[in-house]
Length: 315
Picture: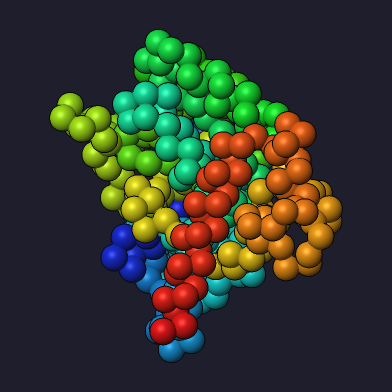
C-alpha cells in the first residue's frame, strides 16, 4: 500500500491512503472532503527498525509504502519512504510545494525580518511562496498597504485577510489548490484561525494573544496535514521558534532575494558582499529605485547573522 503521512506524534504515524478518484466517491464523501473530512482510510503505523539504523526518519508529507498488520483496527508498519522532492529540516516536513507566510498587520506587529528569512528559505528550496497579511481590520494606520506594495512590486502574491470575518478566505482557497501547503508565521498571527476559516469548522486550536506584551501564545503542538481535496493539503505546524536558514551560505544569500538576482552580474567583483564595495550592482539598483532600501537593510542583517554563525562553526 502507498499513502501520505499526515501526522506524527511520538513516532506514531498516521497515514492516509493516497488518490481516490472523484468518480468513485459518493456525494457524501465529496461533501466531507470539501469540509476537510477525508474520505480516505487512515492507518496508524510504526516505522521499521531499519530506518533508525539508516538514520532516516519518516516525516509529515512523506509518501510511503506500508504494510497493513491489522485491518480491523487500521494498524500498519512503514516499509519504505518514497523519494522526497523537498525536505524542510525545521519544522520537519517533506514534499511541500507552497509555503503560506502569514504576517499579522497588528497584535503582534509585522515581523518582516522573519518573513524575509522565510522567503529566502522558500527560494533556496524551490518552493512557491504566498504572503498573507492578516488582521488588516486591526491596522488603523493601514500599514499593511505599504507592506503589500513592497512585496507585490518584487513579484510575490499577497492576499489581505480578516480571518475572524472570513474576508479573503475564498481568494486564499483558490491559491491553495493542487498544492501541499505549509502555513508559516510567528505565534499569534492567525494561522489556526485562517485554517479553521478555510474548513469552516474548528480544525485547530486558536492561539491567544498576551494582553501584556501582545505576543502570541503557540497552540499547535504537532505538525499535521489537513486534506482539502485529493491534491490539496494544508500543513499546520508548531511555532517557528527553531526556524533556521543556516543551510544557506552568507556569500550566496543574495541569490535568494529574488529582486537581487539579476543585479549581481553588475557587481565589479565576483566575490562582492554587496555591503562595503562601491561598484556594487545591488547598491546601484537601490539608488535607482529598483530595490527597496528596507529589503536591503534586512538582507544585511540576515547576511551578518549567517556570517557570525559560520564563524562560530570554525571554532
